[in-house]
Length: 393
Ligand SMILES: O=P(O)(O)OC[C@@]1(O)O[C@H](CO)[C@@H](O)[C@@H]1O
Image (cartoon, rainbow, N blue to C red; front, top):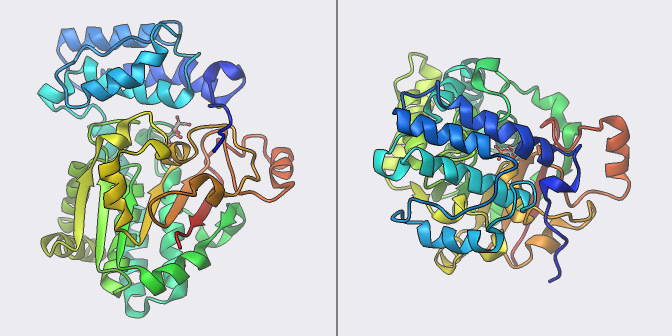
C-alpha cells in the first residue's frame, strides 16, 4: 500500500501541528512542575526539556534500563539530530511525552505527573457524570438500538474533554447536548455498529484515550454492553506510562471505578458497583501495552498485540491521538474511505474521534470544502466528530 507523507510541524507555520510543537509542548512540560513536588534535579530536567523545544534536536533516551528502551532506540535512530519541527508530528509528540517520563525518572519513582489534572477532570465533570449515570441506569431496562446508539454518541463526545487542550480548571466542558449534536458527526456508522454488536458482540475491546469524563463515558458503554448481554467480555486497553497529559492507564480505570463506588449519589454509585462486579467476575479486564505509547502507526503493531486483538469481535478506538495512529498521522485525501486505510486490521474496528488535528478521511466529496467555509477550525476545535466502522468479514 502506498502511504501519503506524514504530517510535520514544519509543513505550515499556521498549522495546529506547528503551534503544538512550537508552543504547546513546552507549556505542557512547564505546567507539571507546580502541579507536583519534584526534586530540584527533576525540575531542572523538565526546564531543560522545555527550553530545548522546538529548536533543539532529537537525541537518544538516557533511561536505558527501562522496558521500552530498546524499542525507543529503534524509533529514534532515523531522526537523530533532526529538530522537533522537522520530524513527523506524531513522533515529535509521542517522543516528547516519553522524554518527560525520562526527565521525572518515572519508571523508578512511579509518579504520574498529570494526576492532579486527571483528578480535577473527573471531579469537575460531576454534573455530566450524574446525568449519564441516570440515563445509563434507566437504559438498562430496555437496551435497544436507540439506547446503544446513545452510548456510542456519549463515548464519542466524552472525547471532547481533553486535558492537554482544556485543562480541568477551565470548568466542565463535558456536557453535551446530544440531540443538537447529530449534525456535528461528519461520518456516522452508528447503525452498522449496532448491527454488528447484535450479531456478534461477544468480545469488545476499548483502546481508551483520556481519563476523567471520557473514561467514565467509555466505562458506561462497557457496562451497558455487559449488563445488556450484548457482550460477554470487555477489555480496556490503557497506556503503559503517563502520556498526552490525560491518557488513561490501568490505575486510572481502577481509580475511576473506586470514585464511582464511593460516590454519595446513588445513581453514580450504582454504576460503580456494577463495574466492580464486572471486574470481580473477570467480564471486564484491564490491559496495557507499550505499543500504545509508541510513535508507530497501527500497521506496525507488534504481532503479540495483533494476535490478541484478532480474538475480539470489535475494537473501539477512542480519541484523536489514537485516530492519528490509525491513519499513520498522514495527509490522506479527506474522501479516502476509512476501511481502505484500516483494511488489514485484525478484526472489525470502530473509531470514535472528536477532531483535534489536521487530518481526516471517509468524508463525502465537497464536505471538507463546505466545512472549511463554515468553520475554518473544523479540524482542530473538537466540535465535530466521526463514528467510523470497518468490518472484518
Ligand atoms: O487523543 P485526544 O486526547 O483526543 O487528543 C490528543 C490531541 O488531539 O491533543 C493534541 C491537540 O491537538 C494533539 O496533539 C493530539 O492528537
